[in-house]
Length: 306
Image 1: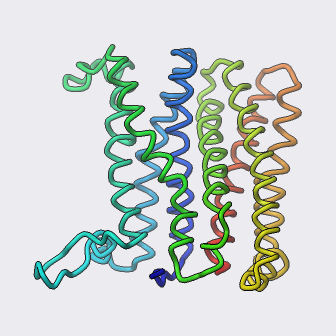
Image 2: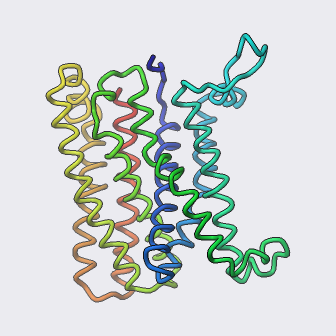
Image 3: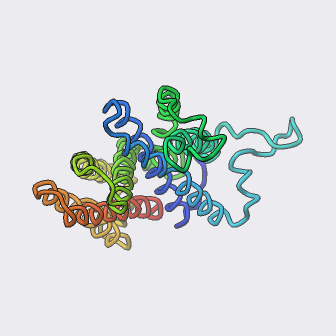
């Protein structure tokens, strides 16, 4: 039976950060493997985009719960046969927390340590330096974390479908929309880190922008199809009016559509046509920031409009 869940702003932040970090991870792993080592910088920065953001996201979740002790009730529930706590296998929130735990361990700790060992800082650390040069092991750990990263990215849509709001369960494109949005924000996070560091290959940055541009175009299409489907669902008309024409219309049209999708797409189009330099690097950073804002607003609107 669907769960009764009360959404709050911290949950929107938690799910946004989780999707962004997960996507930055799998974009980096796939780029490293598919590029046969040509895109090591993407993989390295993608791996560093997991741990701190996820920690911030978990703090947001704890704030929403009100009492830190309630966190354990997302993982366990009282079990009469055991006179204690048992795993909540049927709870979408509980499964999400367990999934996040596996993701943090593999993708947020083990994989970044492999990359840290390759750098100057890691080589001066006795325990970590032993991981240097183990490229096959690093790629295997990267592959091991891929399914967890994809599931974390899709989790917002799955969670909504499992709640007490029936319209979300009838919207099959919702998980796909959140995966696309997460992928775009994950790429944006890597672009932002590359742009701010100043030490990057302009060709690699251009490839990332081009990839994000394709993702945004598909995301625009899926947003349109999702809300078209909702318009023809009897139970969804009120929700669609609230999102598109009601109290959340500004966040939807300005925050999601204009700031998060159309403006970055226009900036990327101009940037990709120009010859790369300091100015286009600044445009790439600006576009990345807008994509991140739009990704947050998407989750904010859909989570809180219920």
